[in-house]
Length: 169
Image 1: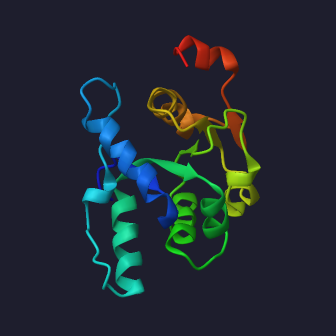
Image 2: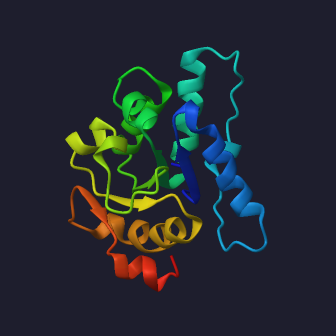
């Protein structure tokens, strides 16, 4: 098994701009947000066959210690359709029992079933739902993801408003 030190960002293709924004946060010296991106490994081309892409996705996820899922209506639809690459990524995240931070693109802080793929809720997988903001995503990756492996907690969880206000959000 590979050394797991990367963050895997899963998203519906319609949400690529938000993924690019996360990359910009990481590069901005004025924003305290960083992650070692698993997407830099095992690159696939748009012309690759689906089997090759899935093989590369699995290899990337072998290096992941945590997942950030960009939560949106498109992510819910594709993540639950059983055939898309996002559905495959969620299947692998569950298989590898990885911590999943769902960053809601609509800004929701209270969890949002409109953005939550069915396979995660059906599995009652312990996830943390946060708004799509670098400070709270970083906080979740440092706090929730770090304690995930030893936790007996199940299902979707959210942070109280006091956590957001304590972070200046």
